[in-house]
Amino acid sequence: MKAAIEREYDGSMYVPPEWPVEVRPPSVPDWETSAVTWLLDAVPPDYRAHEVLRRHPIALARMAGHHVNAAIEAARAGYRTAAVDLKGHLPPHTVEAVLDVYREEGPRLVRLARAIETVERALRGETFTATLRRS
Image (tube, rainbow, N blue to C red):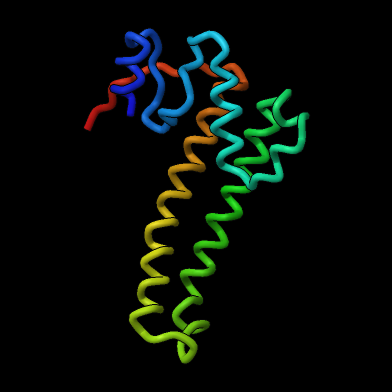
């Protein structure tokens, strides 16, 4: 992910691994436009009807964060209860397939939440620096 950004923008700015490839780095002029487009893709389509969210990307990022975090909680609850809720209504292999969907979507949503949080931090003016960590 970071390598693609560095290639496209000559490595002019470090962005953390959570940074979405669809969003241009904050060092690039008008990067907020790509952030708004990406954030709108992370929320229900009805959010596009609210001009205030396009004009104020920080508000959009905050709402997107709440939306995705709620989806994470819903996925966790669904995973915990799916086997019991669906038993007797679906064949066992179908119940397992539903659980597989939760196993796939849960981590995707967590990655999305981290990416949204990172973009929101940049929208608030935070800059990112690479740090070395001891193992």
